[in-house]
Length: 78
Image (tube, rainbow, N blue to C red):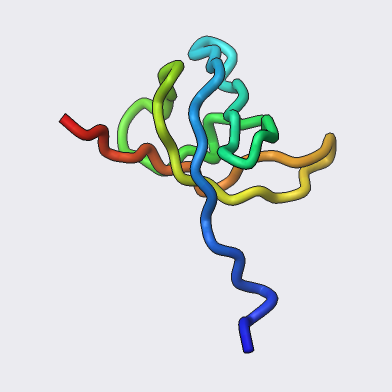
């Protein structure tokens, strides 16, 4: 039996991200757009995202609706 507390991470593409304001939106592969705040980005250094960048994320319920958490940029295939 699956643990209902475990939800596998999703993948999506950064729709837009404002570096100055520190937020944007990710188009999740299931077709839904979710809000992302820079504090949810898991990386070292300046936490930002680029339009079109592929990411892995989880969705949590925030004060204003669904939002991304645990956002990790995926390595691009070169």
